[in-house]
Length: 491
Ligand code: SF4
Ligand code: FE
Image (cartoon, rainbow, N blue to C red; front, side, top):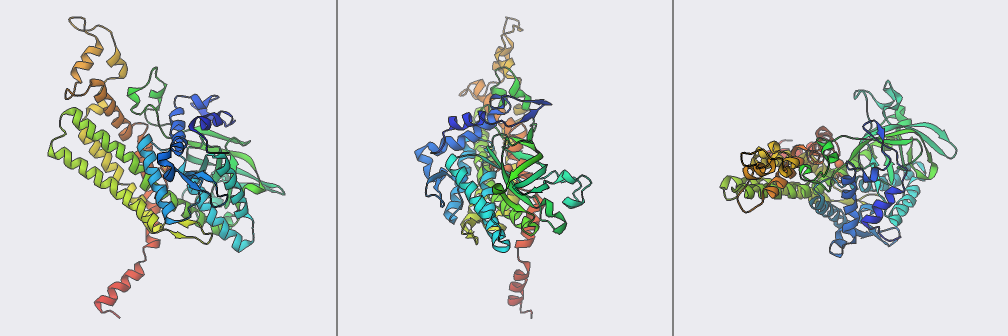
């Protein structure tokens, strides 16, 4: 099958029997639900741009397994060039959606699994790499979305998986059968889970011998029996349920998505298992997936940052203060911060190297430095955006007030007339245009999109401390001490 179009992707979701719950009820037609649809549109953009000849080089690649053209999101990186194109593709998609487009977790999971299964097989003579390759070919041929599910609920963070009071707080093997395994547990804040055709489940931490039943990795369809999702709330999300919702949403078309994914005894056939008790490889899989996803943030967050910077510049212009040197300097600072993140994304890609499987992996130290910066810079970028925009981005009346024809003035002027009059800008833009850019910034800085741009920058792909642990491990302080000793003449 050729690459899917955006429309075909959306239609393909309608055929899924994925169980989705929201506000305590099952959502039957979740594809058209106003709170879910924007997140589907964001994923659909990964299909739409892949059809566009001008983006072909970034959005598609040649499968090393079949020689066929595939969406880059289903590609195993074959060079540092591939790793760099990945980051550029993510920046492009961030620019086009100003949101999380969700497909990267699957790409990062497939790549981490590819090299890890190779190394597990080498040590234990298992067949996981073959399973993974067959699964990958199926995903590539059908151009499907895969969710990469890593984060377990974790319960008491001071206890290992096997030592938790409730055995289900990490996904575990409940039963081993001749033809497969039964798994139980959950994954939390899963990006794009509802919008995915398949899930790849991975362990979330390094594990010891007592955690054997938790060292499990597998693929399963998102509508597998026993599996369901509880949709995550976002700040201001119910604005999407308002009649004719548009301007007040800031970004009416696109959005991100997270959900609680429950595995309430799900059967996984042998051919979809990629790890089953090899606890000594859990750490490798986690480290590699996290590394790839920390690289990813040097692309996607930069693309979204581009739109935030553009909106801040527009807000300044509409307010009539774009020529002020202080405004110009703030825009320079925002650009400097944003491009620094891009430098990190490209640097860890350029310094990539082949794994034993032949697939390329990023430089882990630089990928962790990348993500550590991402936990900080977008916060400063939105702080400056709020500074430039002014308080109006959070105090403006609603779209309904601007459109209201209720006469309230001395001469019969409507609420809408007063809103139009008093929220006027520099005279070169309409009041509505000014309102749109302010609402966009509100959405990015503290509305529904802030999930993807702010808090996800902090915690997505691992919270800051997780990167600091990796930086400590990879930083090679001993070698640096030796450098100092050599020059200072210390024996
Ligand atoms: Fe992709 Fe960024 Fe969303 Fe992760 S946060 S899935 S890298 S867009
Ligand atoms: Fe993320």
